[in-house]
Image (cartoon, rainbow, N blue to C red; front, side, top):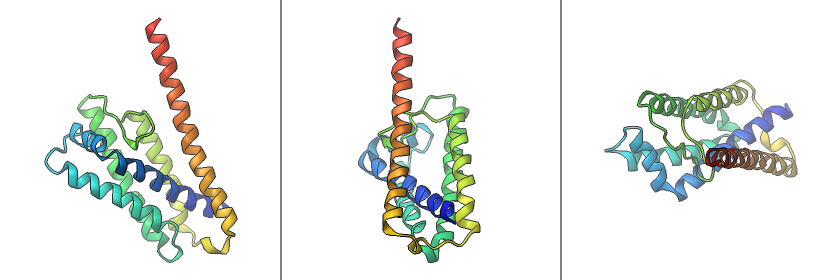
Length: 171
């Protein structure tokens, strides 16, 4: 059951950590939507996506409504999959802005793998009833920090890889 709790905290933290930088750099997130072909309603849709991620992240922390959050993760995931598909269909390299401007990444087939991973993790809050508040506050805080460190390490690896590629391209 402890793994299920960790997965809930991880998913909730990921969604919150994705939404907050997008909110701060809303203009660049809107640019991503425009590049995907959403021009007329880009501002409204960007606001809806960001606040949906915030709401879903919070729902995953609340025991009585965690399953609603789990269903909403699926809905958001289909939107992410559409964005990856659309970027490949229009054959354009589009900045993901998955974590706002914090992580340098483009949309593509690799995005699909990450979304599938998110969907697989999402089954635990949907299938199992877990009570987050039966665990110590200390453990939950540790899980949040482990989740944030995972995002930070992922961003660091991408940045190092991008630097390495730019150095090799310049030689």
